[in-house]
Every structure is written in C-alpha cells, then in structure tokens.
Image (tube, rainbow, N blue to C red; front, side, top):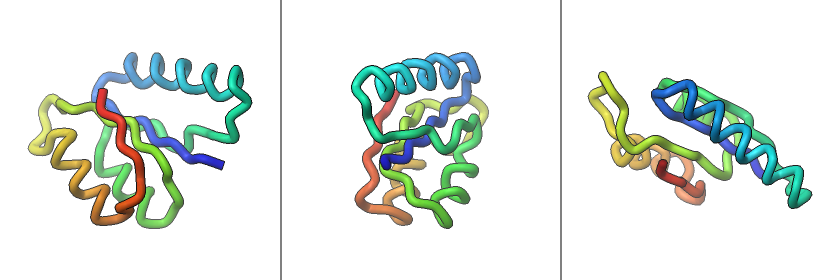
Length: 88
C-alpha cells in the first residue's frame, strides 16, 4: 500500500487533487490511499513522525507562511529520505 499526503494552502486545490489521485488509483487498480489532506505543513511533519508515507503532493508557495514548499521538502527529507515529493 502506498500512502499519499496532499498539502496545499488552497482547500479547493486539495479537493481537486484528491479527486484526481483517487480516480487514478481506482482506474489503474493501484494499492494506494490518501492518508492525510491538510492546509498546514506542520501537520505533515507531525503525521510523518509516526506513520509511513510514500508520496507527498506539496504546494510550492504557501501564502502567509514563513516556509515555502522547498523548505518543507527539506524538513520531510529529514524524517524520510525515501519519500517521493511532487510539487504543485
């Protein structure tokens, strides 16, 4: 099972990406699931500390945040160097 996280500061984008990935999982019979959808990058880091995550779909620009997607990716790599990161 592949575990995905989607993180974007726009809830509409989260919903669109979720639908897109879930349709692809079903259509292609992938053993995958979205385990976390969030607008807050801190949720990713907290979740990944205790759970297995294979792919993070990550916004590159976060409004009203001191960190951008590249900074967050660096933090993700400290927790799991093998996790795939897809920037949106």
